[in-house]
Length: 326
Ligand code: CP3
Image (cartoon, rainbow, N blue to C red; front, side):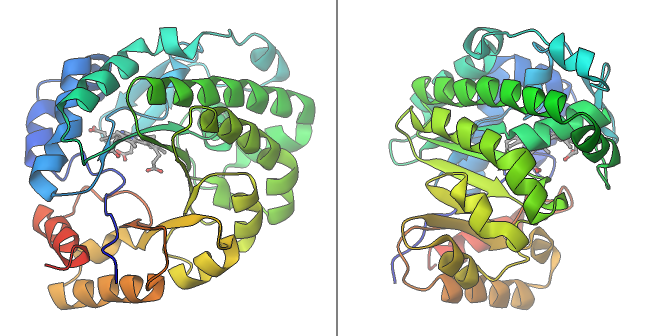
């Protein structure tokens, strides 16, 4: 069997001592705003883990700064949006900044990383998908139930579609700009889209994700379309686009391959919590993912979502070695 490539969502972050050391001196936004620091954090897991790709250090919510929504990260509480979008007027008031100009510091970090990486380790750029971004913009932060998001979607469908159109244009161009700056693949994170019913996904979200992915595809680099909780509507999710479909652990990866069809690659899908399990359990579960992917072309090993902060670095390294056959 061919050895699949392996990288991890959130492979740079709090579970790494060298990241925590930098975070002791700088806030998350400072790390993002300074290209040299963001490049340093991006490169940390490459040396430490032996992964096959780097993911740019940034955050999906950075576009909220040029969009005028106000973004901060409170210690231990996650993101806070100062001026959440709560009515149609707020959508119409949104400015239309140029992503390449307004997020130039991200592109500069991409250029620095691209020139520092070994030739066989590609840089992955990323952005948040219109639905997931809209959910933060409307809720004002994280949510479990997405009540305000869904209420807005049902009560103000015109403003909803306008908001997602605006986000799709911004994010699609932003992704293409990251490719121009040296990213050799792009990932669109629709982290919370699994909270929707299949029919609501199709009518309220899919056209906007399709537009985003079409804009990103114009860059010519492969695009990974990732979401969690997408098993109930995986065909619709895949139909929105992406050269690679990223799935979480709630669906066995052989079933994901069968359902997205032979023309697309699949990325996933170990439960991040398995990295907290005893080695024997972890090794068995990694073997199971590898066996289910089998000899299929276009398999990328990853977790089903990001590395948890509690994760021992040794467990992450061990998974890389196991996937590489060591
Ligand atoms: O290594 C990498 O994956 C690259 C860096 C990266 C960050 N955020 C840095 C970050 C990436 C790819 C993201 C994406 C992101 N950000 C997503 C999509 C991925 C996912 O997990 O679904 C989302 C939903 C966000 C929004 C966000 N950023 C939240 C909800 C939080 C707080 C909760 C948390 O995980 O800590 C953040 C903060 C954040 N972004 C951290 C990092 C390393 C941790 C904060 C810190 O260092 O204090």
